Length: 478
Image (cartoon, rainbow, N blue to C red):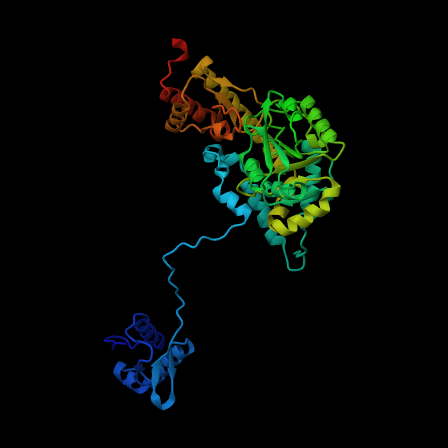
């Protein structure tokens, strides 16, 4: 109960709080009689008005009730805090949910993607200052008169028009804004394509090794997954042609294969397009790792070469703008657009408007393209330096792939235990990962080195330390 204060007179809320605490603690039980407001006022040396206000507060909040001549009582209250039963209820899942919860195949690849910066450029390569300036300009210029509330599931026309120009100049793709749909992330787009184009049990072909999320997505949708090995030219067409049943969709990363870095040759791209036409199949071309190239002219995209609406082009700005934005987009055949928009409305809805406006501006101004070219030169120098230092330290003990783009390089260290390699990399703080878990068949211990993450001097120090922790003889000692 409320105790008499030896200092300042308590306010009505303090009095009410003390009574509530007494009720919650069980000191005042249901039906207990409270003293009158007059007695309360006298005992606490407060005005009766304060006592009345305290009781009125408690009545309003359902703690007490007044019954005329009978007085004021603690009211029965329904508890707002419910204790959980000491049992764990097993929630019944759908077949889809059961597959996700029980199939060991859905275990994520055992790779620490933080070592690869999750596929994105290092922080110093982000156009943070310009991005912030555009955001501020957009916010300052907005008024209630020109703010738009129209929902465009495809993405803002301003951004799709900017993407049309960007695709023409950067990737050689001719696409109308109506053929472009903006997504918050590319994996959502692929998931929607699987739902719209594939039935349970249909076959999807992927590259081996390949992007783990696509494999998991295929299995989650109860699709038959076939992993097609790659060679120096790209996906192995001889093995793809042997597949029975024929894959309904083949998912490829031709610009810079994920994870090996192989660039699909022009002849292989033409062969893949011919295969799709002959088999009434479709190609999902993921152009994720295409922003940085160190070999001059690039091979045309599959979408640019496609004359039969067999290619659905998927791309994202994740690599060059994450975490500023994860905006992604697809370019789809016109006949597929209406159902794609309906499916997107039910699965993802609309992308964030302000980020679309900012991205459109940074594309239209040409700033992003200039910024990317600048860092392309920086990353090319870092790659050359890393290759030189690796060969200098390891000599013939290391094998490197002559890839021509991206932020990572593929390495092989034959004869050295994988556990020793990864342990030495950790000791040297070298951003290197083993990609063996990305293979479906014939797993191989290959390693990705994220050369773009550090300056030439920093990477040199890390490579020397890596070599030292492996306890290998110097090249000059061999």
